[in-house]
Length: 201
Ligand SMILES: Nc1ncnc2c1ncn2[C@@H]1O[C@H](COP(=O)(O)OP(=O)(O)OP(=O)(O)O)[C@@H](O)[C@H]1O
Ligand SMILES: [Mg+2]
Image 1 (cartoon, protein in one colour):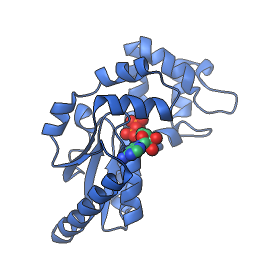
Image 2 (cartoon, rainbow, N blue to C red):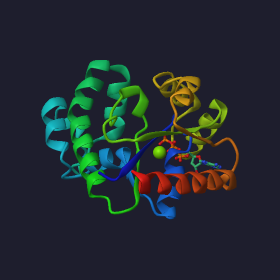
Image 3 (cartoon, rainbow, N blue to C red):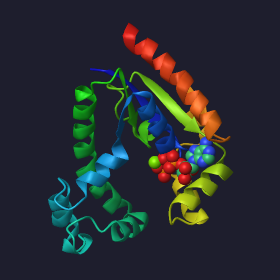
């Protein structure tokens, strides 16, 4: 198994941006959100099960998951959320594990938004890297990038670990309150550290 760092952080904290920097530096980046997206594309491995469990109304005309409709459903229906997760999570984990094992780069960054909330991937990740910024910045960045309103972002934040708890559980921490230059410098420092750790592992 390659040396694997679990990268996590609250919504809009900068996980994907940080992960892209590690990829540029030469790490393998495996993103569980990207895997989830792929599984729910037309012909994706989760589509048949979603159709069976939720009905054809949740599959769009092109054969992909109707994300908007599903998002609205699971927001208001916790049981439906659990059923969706029961379909997706085992498929995501299987695929992520296979991708980690197959990586040829010196180390792997595995991006898992709810890494600490779910306790997933404890057996594959050797360290936890938390990307953190102020809640005000999270809201500003998450609303700028997606169609979510500030209230929707705040509602999602209440389902995630409080910042202090996430920070306390980090082996490594990126403070992403400043600009890209600061993020880049922190990523480069961690990259050097992870190369050393991976070599020693
Ligand atoms: N240091 C930074 N300086 C300026 N903008 C940033 C910085 N870090 C991230 N951003 C911007 O903030 C937005 C959110 O970042 P990103 O998508 O990386 O967060 P995320 O944690 O992956 O979000 P999500 O939880 O929705 O997946 C993006 O538009 C990104 O370009
Ligand atoms: Mg992201």
